[in-house]
Image (cartoon, rainbow, N blue to C red; front, side, top):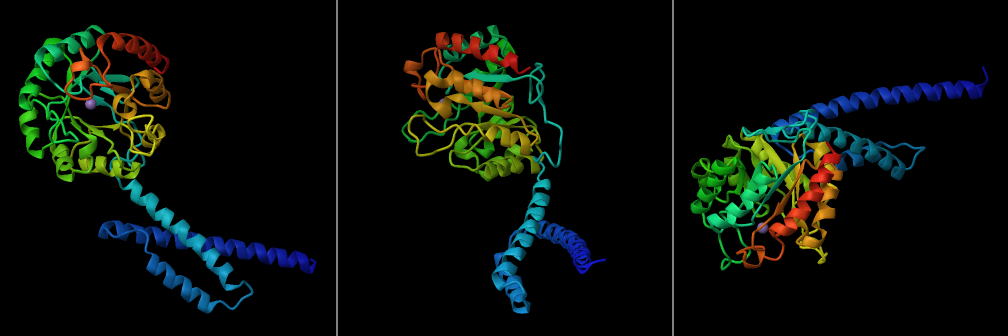
Length: 357
Ligand SMILES: [Mn+2]
C-alpha cells in the first residue's frame, strides 16, 4: 500500500470514530433534553454553551485555529439543541408528532370539521335581534349549511361600541339550532360564562383578543364542547399552537384553529392574512384549520379569491360574516356580506369546495 492510501484509510477510520462519538453525544443530549422538559427549564442555555466553547479553545493545540474549532463545535451544539427542540415539540399534545392522524371534530347533526369535507361557518358579526339572525339562519339552512356564527359577547376596541346582547343573544342563537338544526358558534369572553353558555352553544369561540387569556383557555379545556380558537392579531404561529396546547392539556382535544389575519404595516386590508400559517399548522398539528376571510381582509371585493386560496392551501373550511342589512349592523358594518352578495359568494365557494373533496 502506498503512503497516500494508508493515510486515506486512516482518515476514513477517524471519520467513523467521529461519527460514533457524535452519535453518542446526540443520545446524551437527548437525555439532557428530557430532563429539561421534566424540570421545565429552557432548552437553549447560551451561558453553558459559551463556557464549553471557552474550555475547548483553551485545550486547542492546532493545527486548526481557534475560530475554526469554535465554528465546528457551534454546529455540533446547534444540532444538539435542534434534537432537544424536536423532542420538546413531540411533547406537545396538539403536535402531529404526538398524534399523526387528523383530529376530526364531529357534531350530532352530521357535520365534521377536519375530515374529508370542507365546512363553512357563516353568520352575522353580532346577534342584534331574532329577526336579524333568523333571516341569515333560514338562508344558511336552505343552502344545506350545518353551522351559524354570531357574537353575543363582543370584545370591542372602544368601550363605547356595542358590547353584544349577552345571554339574550345566546337564547336567540339557540332558537336557530332548534328551528334549523344549525350548530351554534359563539364567542365566550369570561371564564365564568362557560357553564351558563353551555345550554345554548355548540362551539365555544375564543376570539383573537383573548388568544392568550390563559384563564379562559384553561376553562375552555375543561369544557366538553369543541373550541374554535382564533389566532391573536399579533401572535406568532408558535404562540398560537401553545394557546391550543393550553386547551388540550386541560382535557379538551376538540379544538379548531382559525387563522384570521395578523397585524402588519399593510393597510390595503384590515389585517394581513397569513396564508402560509394554514399548511404550517396542518403539518405541525393534527387539528383542523379554518380561515376567516372577513376579519383578515375586511374587504368584500376580495373575499372570494381569498376564500378559494384558503381551500387551495389545505384549510378545512372558511368563516365569513353575513348580515341581512349590513348598512345598519351594530359591528363590522363595512365588511359583512348582505344576503344577495352572499348568494353569489356561496355559489362560487361551494363550487371550489367540491374541487377539494
Ligand atoms: Mn366581526
